[in-house]
Length: 396
Image (cartoon, rainbow, N blue to C red; front, side, top):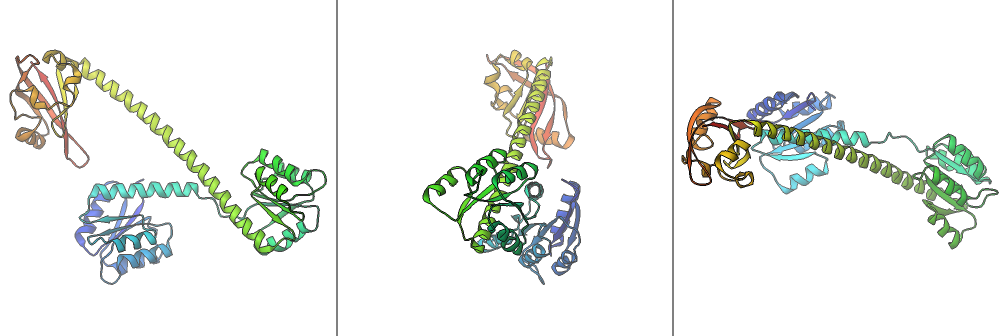
């Protein structure tokens, strides 16, 4: 997600220059500082950086001090530790203070870019899953004075606001009109009792936490309550600490379930996206293979080890092989000349020039016959300009 602001703190100017050039090239806004104290001051002033890359061993302020103070000032900032002196202690300390990753020198630019990409994806997912911090909606259901005591006394003292219903039917009507995260219901009430109310609420929203309270506890009613999905079963008179702790634990569970549902949905979406992308790639591959097979010339594609990865129909027909026999085979087996543009010194020349045209090679067929051919080709390069293979087109 290029465009984010990155702060690099390292007392080595060469590291700062390397990271600035690398990360600027992929679209990030990068600022570098060789003075660790100056870098930390930028963070503490609240300058809006999304990511911090900091060395560990530096004069004035070391990387761990910067990590701790940066996280204290900006908890959402992504911090990546870089060091030329890795140790188990610093790895543990970095993890303890929530550094996203720990990269050792000499730095691999691709590794740094990949790490930053992963960190941004992780932060995005975390933000999507995060539930706004607001108190739970609570409904207290009781035909006795204890409901008023709970809502106006114990719960309000803890910063909660609870609504009151005096019987099960009223509670159910209220629940249909408004969502409640937690329902605290008396077991014994006229008309609709606590268990029946519990069943009806679970039909409407299975994730709502229902706490059953009773002045007449029994093993049988407790088993029945839990069997029907009650979160907890508490006895009257209500102990304030017990009910508050139950609500705290229950709401944490409620949030965890919501987060889990969101994560599952996100994973399902990602899986479908991968399926769709894979289907698209398969279509593109089939289309490319169709073009290759329709070509009147011989076409060979090798990997970085000069092994055949793609071969055209014309090549198979002229050389007398089955396609399966050629795939994975060394390119040397098809030519009398062992030094050619698919590898070796001529391939290096091709890399310098960008391509090769009319390169003479003698093909050897499956029966040992020879065919004089001329080949043109070009190297296949990755993002780092490293040769990953060669594509060649040959004519008789």
